[in-house]
Length: 415
Ligand SMILES: Cc1ncc(COP(=O)(O)O)c(C=O)c1O
Image (cartoon, rainbow, N blue to C red):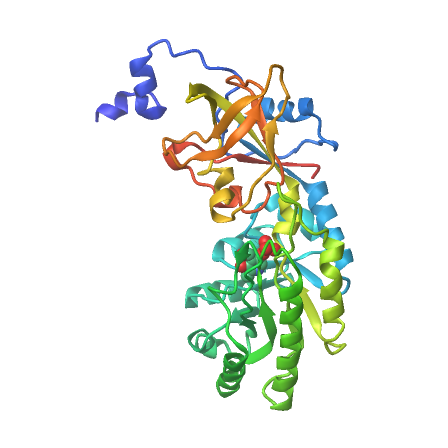
C-alpha cells in the first residue's frame, strides 16, 4: 500500500523528486476536464488579445467553438440547397453546445452510434428529427435507437436487412448506394454502400420480410473536391427509384445525399454556392415529391473551431528550432493523420526577430508526433501560444489522451 501514502498527481513522483516543486510557467496550465456555462462572448474577427485571454482563463490546449459560425455555416448551406432537410452529422464534433445551437436553428441530426443517440437525447432533441445512418449495427444498437424513438435506419447488405425483420412496422429503411469518389479527400464509398442491382435485390428481400424501404442514400466522400460524383449519384438514384416503382418493389420517396461539402484548409475549396449549383440542378430532375435530405458534418462545424496550443519547450536541432506544443497528432491535430487535413497554424502574436527554420511538434514521446516541418517562424519561447484555424471537424473528436496528455478542452463561445 505504498502508493496510498503518496500525494496525488503523477503517482506522487513530482513531490518525491522535487520536494519544493519546480516553478511552473504560469502560461502553461494543464487543461482541467470540463467547462461549464456561462460561456464567453468573443466578437469576430478575433483579436490575439481576446484569444490569449481565453487561454489564460480556460487553459491550454483549448478548442474554441464559435456558435455564431456554426449558425452561419448552417444557414449558408441551407440557402445553397433550398428544400433539402439538413441533418447535422454528429461525428466530426459531438458536443452538446453544437447540438443545442443547431437545434435552435431548426436542424435535424444524423446519428451513427449509441453515444450520439445518448447525446441528442440528453439535449432533449425529438427523435423525429434524427436518422441513424450507420450501415452496420448490432441488434442492441438498433434497439437503443428505436427505444429513443428514431425510426429511420440505413442498410447496404442482406445480413443487415435481415436484422430488421423483428422490427417490421417500427423501422423504415434507406438503402445506401456506393459511388466511388477518388477525387474526395476521404472516399466513403469503399467501406460502405452497394450497387444498383444489390439495392433492387435488397428491396425484394425487404418485401418478403415485410420491412419498409423508404428511400436511398449515399455518401460519396468527405471534403469532396468537386460536386460531379454527387451529381452522378443523384441521377443514378433517380433512375433506380423509377425502376423500383416500375417493378412495384417500393415507393422510394426519400433521397439522402450524404455529407462531403468542402471547406477551406491551407488549400482553398470551391465556394459552397458554386459547389451546390450543379447539385441543385440534379435534384430538380428528381420527381417533384421526392424528400431530399443531407448529412453535412464538416461544413457546419469545421470553420467554427479554433485551437489554441502553447509551446511547452524548444530545442535547436540540425539547424532548426523545434517547438514542442501541448497539442499534437495524438490530440487536436489527429485529423492530419485520419482526415488528411492541413490546418492553417500560426503564432498568436507575430513576435519579433527574423523568421528561422522551425518545426512544430506535439507533446508526446512518439517521433511521429510532428505537426509541421519546413516552417519559417519568428523565434518562439515556452508559454507562447499558437492558433490553428478551421479545426472544428474531425480534430478533437478523434483526439486521444496518449501519454496522459489530455485532449483540448472544448470552450463554446457566442452561445
Ligand atoms: C454516414 C455519414 N454521414 C455524414 C458524414 C459527414 O460527412 P462530412 O463531414 O463530410 O459532411 C459522414 C462522415 O464520415 C458519414 O460517414
